[in-house]
Amino acid sequence: MKNRTRYLLWTAFGVLLLLLGIAGVVTGREDETVTGMFITSGIIVLLFAGTRAMRGEKGPEQDERTRKIGAYGITYAWFLTLVYLFALFWLENTGVLALSSTDVMLSSILLTTISATVFQWWLFRKGDVE
View 1 (tube, rainbow, N blue to C red):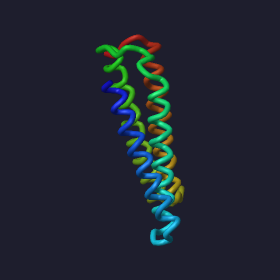
View 2: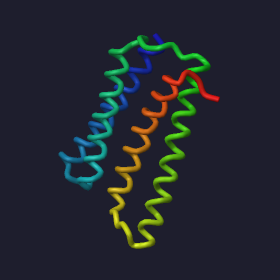
View 3: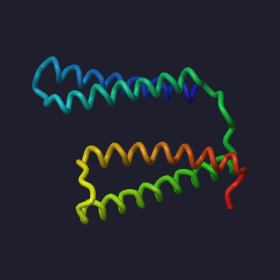
View 4: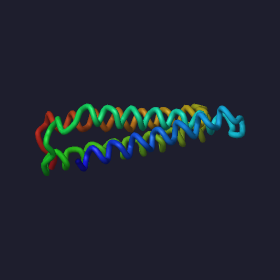
């Protein structure tokens, strides 16, 4: 029952965000960026809540090893992203590369999520972290 309540709350939150965005479009009082943000956020929350509810309690059981590997993978991903941003900073300051802020944010988000997945996969294959 606990998980069902959680899924219902997330679904309600997603519907609320979606309705706020739609209300902003209908009334025309909000900026298009703000309404788009609300609509997109609502759809994403609903998708995540729906996939979690359909998956249920299936999946690997978490133990100390899996939590440790997950934490190490995320830590490695954040460190790699930090090095990446540091390199972008120096490439920008030396005039070698010029990226827009949107490009930097998108590439950072993609690098962090993909590298976290790859590091965790690699550490699970390795067996353990030391």
